[in-house]
Image (tube, rainbow, N blue to C red; front, side, top):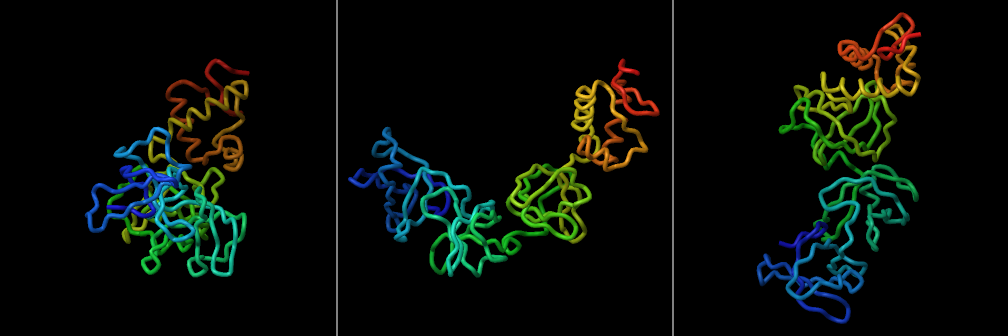
Length: 285
C-alpha cells in the first residue's frame, strides 16, 4: 500500500520524456496509482521492473510525485525544522525537499518567524489529503507510557522549556520531563539526545535523565575525571567540600556524580585523596 509522506519501495514501470513512472506491486489493481520520478532523480542504472526506494509526496500542483531525496522529517515523526518564509495563511519550513512544508497558522503554538527553528510533527490532513506540520506538539504525543522500563535507554528530542526543566519527546511517542537541576550541559529545543528513563510515576508520566542510572553512570564520569587529571598534570584541587558549581565548571557533572566517580577511582587505586585535592596515583606534590 502506498504511504504518502513516507519512504516507499516502488517498481519502475515505464520511462518517459519527463522521467520514470513507478508503481506499487502490492496495491490492489483497482487502486493502483502510477507516480512520476522526475528525470533529475532517476539513477542511470534504473531499469524497468527494478525496485527503488523513494519518498512520496505532493508537488506544487498537488500531484503525487516521488523523489530519491530523504527529507528531514517523515509522516508520523517529530523534527526540528527552520522557518524559511511566513505568509498570511502559515509558515513554510525547510524539510530538505524542493517544495517547502506548510505549518498552517492554526497549527502554530506561537507565531513563527523566518530563520527560527521549531520542533514540529508531520501528518496527513484528512480534509485536504496534503502533508502539513504542526508545532502544537502535545496533542500528538502521549505523556503516559505503558511499554517503558526504568533505566531503559531512549532517544530524546527536546521541544520546550518548562518551569521545572525541559519537555522532551521519548522515542517519537511519549512526553518526558528533563529536570533543570539534573542537567549538567546546555540543552536547547531541537536537541536530539540519548537519555534514560528515571521514573515512571503512579500516573504513568515519565521523568528522564541524561545520566545512566546507578553504577553504570560511574564509569564514563570516572573516565572524565581521569582525562581532566591527565590534562592538569595529575592534580585537581577538588574535595568533598568544593562548591558544586566549581565541580560542574571543571567536570560538567553534579557533585553527587563526582563523589561516586571519585569513590570508584579511589577503590581501584587510580587516584589518591588528600586535603588539598585529587592526585593521580604516583603524582604527589
